[in-house]
Amino acid sequence: MEVVICKTYDEISKRSAAEVAEVVYNKPDAVIGLATGSSPVGLYKELIRLHKEEGLDFSHVTTFNLDEYVGLTPDHPQSYRRFMQENLFDGINVEPENIHVPSGTAKNFQAFCEWYEDRIEQAGGIDVQVLGIGSDGHIGFNEPGSSLGSRTRMKTLNAMTIDDNARFFEKKQDVPIYSITMGVGTVLDAGKLVLVANGKNKAKAIADAIEGPVSCMCTASAVQLHPDVSMFIDGDAAGQLKMRDYYEWIQSKKPAAPTGM
Ligand code: GLP
Image (cartoon, rainbow, N blue to C red; front, top):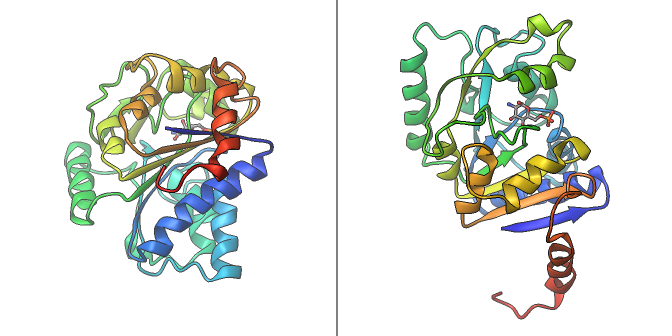
């Protein structure tokens, strides 16, 4: 696990976008897993810049989003489908038929979730998965208590997540209670994980994810089981890490490390 403590949000965004871009440069038909929330907005801005100014080509890329609110149509102002359109898809040349966001309005949610898992498999699996982290340590909408082997399914949001996400809605009562989310097991199947987090309100979740026991009480801690994880966080989000000095030491020594390390 690589923990990169960045000085600014801009640095988080540029360095995490570079990881995603590298996957696409190396594999033009890459499959990218995407996340919503405020944390990856800068990462998406940088991918748009790389597309517009440096020719990063998404025309053969396929995307799968982590989650969606149940009950919101794709054009609802707070739907994750719309968030992705406004924050990334409108700025790059991904083909609409290659975009996948879980449906919040499926007729049969269980059948939809099975289809979503099958689609990921048919696409060849996710090469790189972008992740944010909830203040309760969730990835996607895998709330505390979620099975670490879980697959795409419906999850009931907890009070903390409803409170956190209320800022995007007119009133708290408007926040949907249910979601469709890739499971922790789905996320762990991706070839590479890139997690971004900033701000003091993420400090406990980040410490639990990186240094806590692997536990369903912080589903982000499951990334400890993954062999290729990069975490780009700021000093505030790193505030409760016990080994912060060591992570900074590793990064400072990286340029001089023998090749192949
Ligand atoms: C939501 C999303 C998560 C996201 C989290 C954090 O709950 N389902 O995927 O990581 O919010 O959001 P933010 O980055 O706005 O703090």
